[in-house]
Amino acid sequence: MKITGAALMSAEHLFRTFRRKGHFGPFADLGTGRRELTALPGMPVCDFGDFGRGGMTVRKMILTMLLAAWDSGDTHFEDAGVSGWNGSGCTAENLNYWRDYISNGREAGRGGLFVATLPTIPCCEAAIALQCRGPVAYFRTRPSLAALQEILTTFSPGRFFCSEVTAETVCVFLADTRAQGCPLPETDTLAALFDRLEERK
Amino acid sequence: MTDPSVHILAAAAVTPLGSTVRENCDALLDGRTCFALPRHFDSRGRLLGVDPELDGKGSSRMERLLDKLARSLDFTVPAGTRLFAATTVGAIDLLEQGNEVDTVQEFLHLAERIFNLSGGTLVSAACASGQTAAALAMRELRHGLCRHALVIGADITSEFVTTGFGALGALSHTVSRPYDQNRDGLSLGEGAAALLLSCEGPGPGRLIAAAENCDAAHITSPDLSGGQLAAVCRKALDNAHPGAVIGHGTGTIYNDQAEIAALQTVFPDGMPPLFSLKGNLGHTLGATGVLQLALGLEFASRRLLPPQAGLVSPIPGANVSNRPRTLDTGRILSLNVGFGGLNSAVAVEAS
Image (cartoon, rainbow over all chains, first blue to last red; front, side):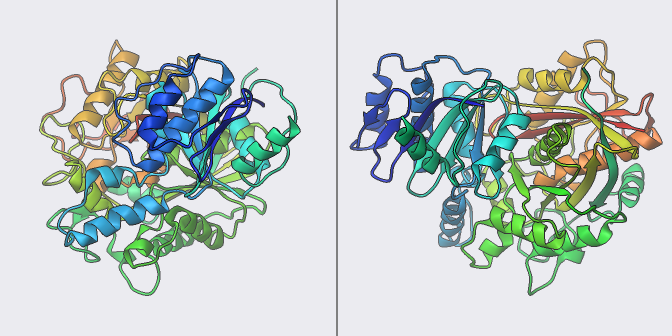
């Protein structure tokens, strides 16, 4: 498996990319971040038509995945899949929907908040934005990069965006599971892998 | 080189209609349904495919469902079997009870404990979770990463999910009528199923192939052309002709329209007999894919397809019937579609 691009958004809303060694932000808000990042030379075409539809998690995911795509130097991702792995899942989104429903007297839920309760939604929104038509799924395993690599190399050969979303950070790697790359260090999170690879460089 | 066979050594299914694959198939062939008002929350008159045996206090409804599935197994799970657990929202009733927990993590922990298997993999791909988990298990077996795999899919009925689908306007005002011209939405249901897979056979059937992709078009609506769904169907079939298609068939306007469009593309000379479980059981979400494979294999073995429950006026071009039909081959194509534009197709064959 070969890593062809990666991006990390920190708790301070600072974005870093791996291969191009880019540092961006912090931005006044994610809308400003979107405008500034899409102005970068070589940025892939991205459909931001529904950027405002998703919550903060979705917007962070789209921007981080866009930067990982840019970091790879590729411009088209139609064959690529998108996966989510571990992280904080959608506990916050579940609570958000349920508390809103309860606070409205259990009369009616809000569809937009409900849709966000599926763990695959950030991946799907990012897939729509970058027009990725490969498989999309969320996996939870023991916290081990080896476990993730087993899934990625067997689930769908080819290019795969792999994401990890927590309350503070978003990390996205673009991997080509058919290509031979350097062995990856064993880490328990993608954010830790990003840091280790950055140190190695 | 052809991929090594992945054998289905055994299957289990628990729904309001039965606690074994055989009981469920008999019920479906009889055209029975299970829609009722739930007792564990106020569904505001919505009928659900609800299992009263899961009512109770003290533990999680999801725990009771998984316990029921484990008790129903009439086979031994070999030591070292790898667990693949599929769900959409997991033990969501814990959150309803005020526990601020990660409900899919809780689901995985419950499954690991109840089936006595550690180091499991949770797979969530919206309503395509079940088949996606089976596909991952099949590929890990083919890569030699495990000798046996237990794939389970489970979801419960809940106020959380019912109000959510209600807010999206996706629920039927009566009950789900898949592939009917006058369908008006889905009915939710609950259930669980399991498949024991191995490269060492034989068993009652085989997983032949699977494929997944994403429409990348809309977050809640499928691509009505069915183009991406047709692509996974072709890939899973690999030019073989199935005896029947177990469709996703939720009974929503858009889902069924997209599925029929996809199947007309894949089978321009006439689609095979088509059937959806959801007219009998409701939409069991993360369980539906595993249920479809478990029950589809039994239909293939019997060479019989149940009547389509709720069907009065079929969608033009849909090969559906309100009578049982015989199958000309023992191969079944099963489809799942999920929010986010997720598509999954799996081909299974009876031995």
